Amino acid sequence: MLKSSIMKTTSNRRNVLKALAVAPAALAQQQHQHGTGELLQIAAAPKPQVFMGEDMKAIERLADIIIPRSDTPGAADAGVHFFIDSAAKRNQGLEKSLRAGIAWLKKNDFLKLSEKEQIALVTRMVTDEPRFFKTMKDMTIDGYYGSKEGLTKELEWHGNTFLSEFKGCTHPEHQV
Image 1 (spheres, rainbow, N blue to C red):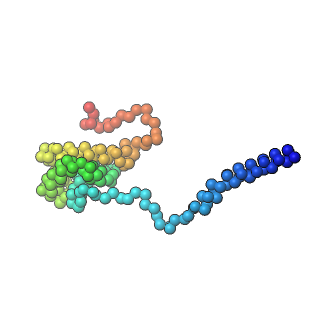
Image 2 (tube, rainbow, N blue to C red):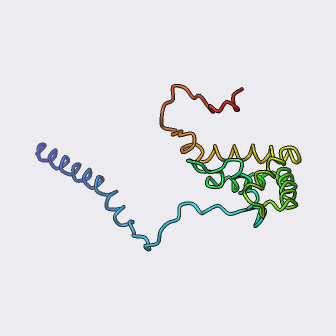
Image 3 (cartoon, one colour):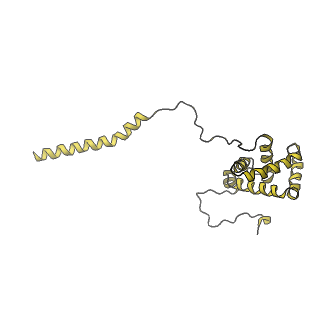
């Protein structure tokens, strides 16, 4: 009788354990529904928030002159102009400063100039509008080297690798 009772209890325990093991799968199967067949967009393409139209094009072009495309992506490829636009949205002083610089670019027909003329104007900007140029240069560098393109393609940095040392920029003009 005792043996029969123990067998019954063991059998019941096994049945309970089996039921508990199967329950999550059965529940998941009931809850599983197929989608509508539409693709899920993970992240929307960035949109200008502060600078629109010609102003945004001027920021994009200036950033691309500062870090042009070579064998690696340039600033425009990395979306640096959206980084600058986003920073201006969070800082009204920065927005005001950038708007003044953009006005200077417009006054000089920056977007209508040839590439060679644009580069000459940016070179002139270093002395005529040094504050604006420094702000744009600093923000372009920050935005570019904070982007996937700057980190992984330009610097070839992949966060999952060990570096015994990091030499930084090897250009002689950037050495301190």
